[in-house]
Image (tube, rainbow, N blue to C red; front, side):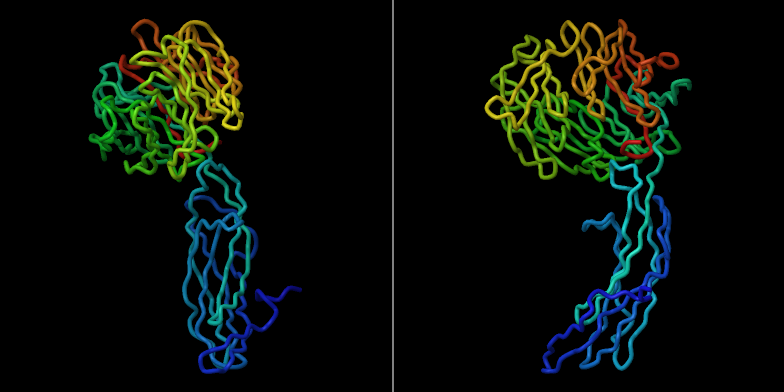
Length: 462
């Protein structure tokens, strides 16, 4: 049978003290009282934890009072939650025995994780001589089931405010509050806020699904950015952000902002470079820029520090990608960053490719590229003579008859929402991601609608 109290170390720990005496003392002993076995927990749960600490009396000399702490995390040195305090007294002629009780407020799983995650609960005591005793228990944390609550866009048929559609077979509704004129928009999953962008960013809280009458905050364009305002507005990569953040492209940089509008990270271009597109590919922030000399340049940045790592430069051959208003899009092919030129030519960059790191391929379809983009899972789409959906290898997996302006993903229900244009009429349509079967009827969008965003209850995959 195991002893009821745990101790780390079997030998007596001896420390010299200033008086010239020596302290001879056994290490503290720790035992978990609650939980008594492996438990299952969920975000938002209040879990009562209790453990007993026995700090033995010194066999020789005197000692000070010790400390306790509890650590919870997935192991390997990571700590997601901790609490600590002092033991009630220093042991003298007799041992002291304490019972520690704390409440663990279970936080969300790490962004990008749906669970289950195996956690280690560590109860630790350190005596006045620095000796340690500990006991351990296990917990399993399951993530919150992913759900979505509808599609949002900025600009309904009257052009002002927000448009909303609550599902493929639901009904549209419109809000007069919100931005005026064309704006980008993104819902920050789990944050109940819409962020819009034009000449500046604004955050519009949602209360019971209804936008606030006025924006809660405004984040202005960086002073060094040229006139032009927001170029793109998306969700930041949930695998690399603490919670749902907004990713915004300006002419001279890409930035991430929290739900409170605070800038969290920034990747800044050099003088003479102008941003065309940006986003996370693998573990890098990648910016596609054009130079004052008319070249295209792909640049890798450290995603944590913002440091510029390396770049590759070439002269685009497509006529639509040259001149004062060049067109280019950042895509992803087999996990590598790819720059798409206006004639459908993709330049794929393998930074480990040696002296010739760039390869060229022609994307599916014909005619000039009118638009292109990536979904959150790395798959791509282009709009040429027809709309084309592509897999991870940039091969066609489906088509759309009218020009595509935007594609946004409902991760919870396995849907792609497609914004397309037929003449002067812009509409939304839901498609099954498995076979691209349209669901429900077309939903009217305003003539100034740029993009859409599906509201999810949390970041990350199903």
